[in-house]
Length: 255
Image (cartoon, rainbow, N blue to C red; front, side, top):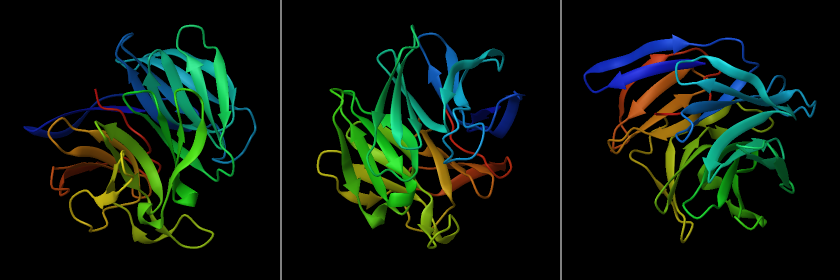
């Protein structure tokens, strides 16, 4: 896991790097406790082997608890809402109480490859399914449904809710039976109220996108998993800058 500093005055600057994780996938910041939670797949992305889990680290990169939660399979996307950590795990969403670590599992019927997680202002949890061009929703009351299924999503991976818009970092249009793409992805917008899909900025492909976070200036920080890039796009969707991290650069958090 790598922590970068970024400002408009300078390019990405590495501040610290922490090793020792097991296939880390996603990170989320808990502002109340000033810590980060990191999901560890620890194996293959679709293997149910009970080896995955969640780590807890400080904002200085110190590992507080490498195995804060154990016994998951291949956990990926993470988000926090009202004292609970939500984690996608192949074909289920897991809710973890941050104080007690008590867990509750929500199976997602017919899921193929659950990926990122984002929670809206009222507690609805959105989970992307990259291999099925779909986004599932688990309501605060625990009702599970296929919220949106549309080829226009083009391999939905990273998710981010801002107000009434769900931003989607798409992987791209995949070739049959493969994660290789005939067209790389970009950023989509979905109106949460009417599920209308539109383009954020240009429709030009920019990468096999994974993580997405707002940059505070109307744009986003995004990662390109396949090409190992961390990028910043402006409010028009144009790339402002990037740094190379190596293939497998997955989800991200911005503090």
